[in-house]
Image 1 (cartoon, one colour):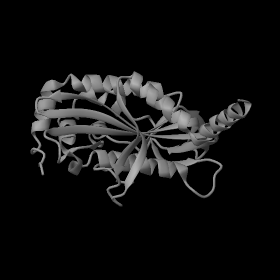
Image 2 (cartoon, helix red, strand yellow):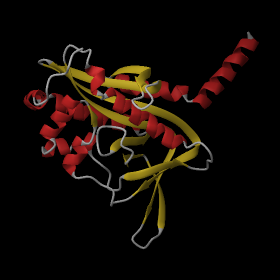
Image 3 (cartoon, helix red, strand yellow):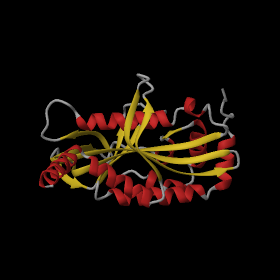
Image 4 (tube, one colour):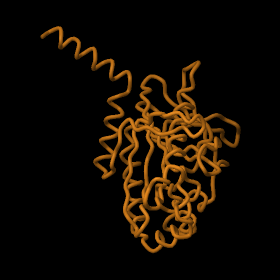
Length: 268
């Protein structure tokens, strides 16, 4: 009995170092917010055509006549208690308000909807589409050498978002799918931003979340927009996205008009 307890303690400590409890906690936050969650989901890497794993895929959806409207989240979780992450930010890195709405990973029908509502001030003001005053243009994990964990995480969520939004994935569906995909990285640890003042001084400040405008065009947009957040801030991020989804789901007329501007999905 004592030996089993010792083994259980060892396993518990090992699991903590591997980040599995973080994934379970993040999945629970999404589930409690009303999302359908799929832990350890798989997607097809559109570049290599290999099957790859994402920590969590979650979505909320509703039917609009013959179209399934869906907002989904691809989540990569990283435990980094001793090695904080740093985002490099600048006020010069920004997007116009309509572009903040349109430049999202999305299926063709999803893109058509976003294009139809991107000039709507109420949509632009939704927290899920807002950028911080200083968006991030790069990211790294501090005190490391060798593998770039931050880059790998960005690559993973971006490829997942691109795969989920890929039109080929919809071909076997019997109806059109208007999907908007939001990539998020959740960190168990501290997050800092670094930027230069007008005088050229380097500033480093602890923050709770940031938004990375990644120039690595892995999605069908000019930028890959990735939310970077600490675990403590993640519930607030989910709340903002949930409120935005509720607002978008209520735009029934725009959903119908936006989705029908696209040709029907080709069925094989």
